[in-house]
Length: 404
Ligand SMILES: *Cc1c(COP(=O)(O)O)cnc(C)c1O
Image 1: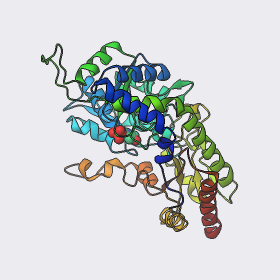
Image 2 (image 1 turned 135 degrees about the horizontal axis):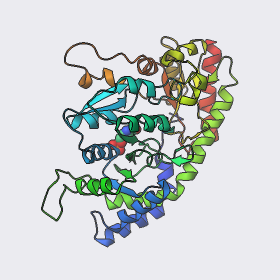
Image 3 (image 1 turned 90 degrees about the horizontal axis):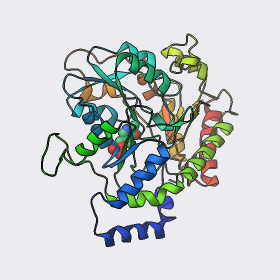
């Protein structure tokens, strides 16, 4: 593949001496669980994300799990999650015996459709879990208003959105909890699994901190049922090396995304997704419902939108390729030209075998189902060369010209 979807090596090898030094520092410290490396990294993240508390944890998935545990969410409780997201968002809810209730998303920005969330509230609803998918914030004002009105908690799944902003604020610190992932494919990738949990609430932070270490306080006395959710100080040390580079990584992704959008929107019929069709931004609601995406039917390709009120960090650059079989055709076309692409996500979560209701049909979530058949993410990682970007651009352009 001359253009891989993601190549982690150049980014990490560019930092090899510093990463080696970090490893040596941890090795020689003899401190391999929690400790100063983690404290320092947590302080740096709290400051960057403008939150009072940041806890290094074992993964983004465990950050979600820990946040739900700290909120005592369990059997009998419902948590509203988008259907169009990575599995962990809903999986963490189900693992605690609570019920993930799937809501539909906006066809324009891919994030939770607030009006659909409202339709799915029941007396058992305890929390809403917006995901800032592909690096763009969900409509947090509307979600927070809805949550306040109904006394619900909000957990932001910001796994794909570290550094993204919403109306001038970093995402993650807006809800009761924010969760991040340092899985190597995220914008700030560790050399293994790691995650972060953030909150502005002192009591919730204290509880999460206890639950991270089996709930023990004092040592060997357990009032709470926790588990081991700690981030390795070794990963914290590596991440501390990479953190100062993060803005540069974002910049490169933004540059690549801007070039894609500029070049592809010049192709016949191709356009950026129409924000006025967005059902999820209150100020933009103009009677356009969730089905507004269907209007896009005529375009051969729809480019992702970055709202001006959001600071988007482009964890993915995700195209929509309308028309039966056309997404697969584009994917094959690109593959034959050495350009990798990936479908995030091919099966909406409400249709996953493990979430199908025991009896009856799964709920109908038309936008999520539609998007699952249309989306295609193309390489946008920071280290792409201009030659590689040209390959991606040409690959897509020749497909559009060939298919008209
Ligand atoms: C990556 C991701 C997670 C899980 O993070 P891990 O660190 O891999 O456990 C959760 N939610 C979303 C939306 C993600 O993209």
